[in-house]
Amino acid sequence: MTDWLMVIITAIYVVATIIICYFNGKSAKAAKIQTDEMIRQYNLANRPKVTIHFDIIRSGLLCFVVENEGTSPAHNVSIRINQDFINGVDEEIERNRLEKLASSELYLASKQKMFICLGGQPLFTALAQNKAEIDISYDGYEEHTSIDLNQYGMFLVYSSPLEDISQHMKKMKENDDRFQKNLLKQVGKQYPIQNIIVHPETVDEANKYKIYKTICCEKKTTTNTLAEGLGLEKDYVLQLLIELERVDRLIRHLDLEDDYDSEWFRT
Image (cartoon, rainbow, N blue to C red; front, side, top):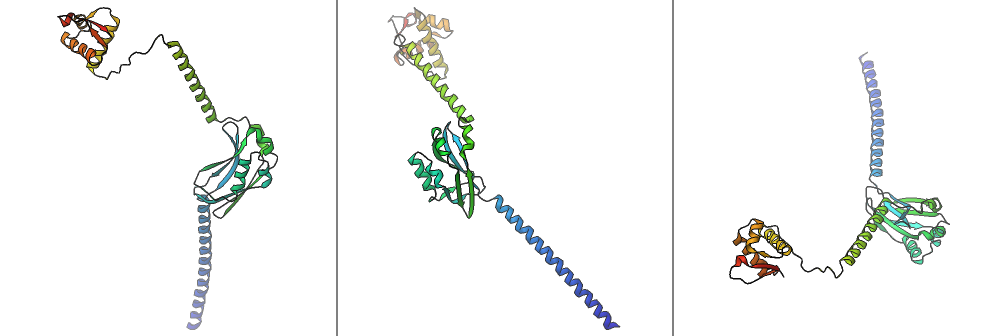
């Protein structure tokens, strides 16, 4: 009886162990699948992603815009455009540039853009005859994009907000230039600029300017009248007058025995 009981208990343990191992295996497999999916999603979120689209910049310049929209830099970026589209490019310089793209290996930082010039608006009809088939390869990734320029014909008069601001600032500058020229014409030779006076923000210099302005406006000005009119000490006024005469050379005076009664004039 005891032997049979041991056999039964052993059998139960074996079956339980098998069941536990089975479910542990399924859990490990599910965990691996979940981990692999997390890694895949992480790599997708942090991979470079190079795209290309058509745009019109500077109010009429046709171009392809290549941009790395991903969060990581793209290395060895190669851009190949079908020959039929390239043949539609009228300018030889632009055509040669497009052909050289296939052999170029470029670097694009995250969010970096490159502009591939195709020509001006007058060339749009010739460019739109063939659809652009573009293959981009980088860091083991391959991207294919088809661009039909005919779909963009309605946007040829497009003007971006930045272009509007640029044109507005250009008009402002032109208006300023015209105003300055007209102002100079009005000033002419009748009102020549004789002196330019720069006054530092000090009390003495401010008083000197007041004295000089008074002398320019009054026909007959003496040291005493200046002191009384400005409410300053006459010795202080005389000192500033001497500076204006000997240092700044803006005024002169009649030589009299009494300096306080001397008349001062603008030079």
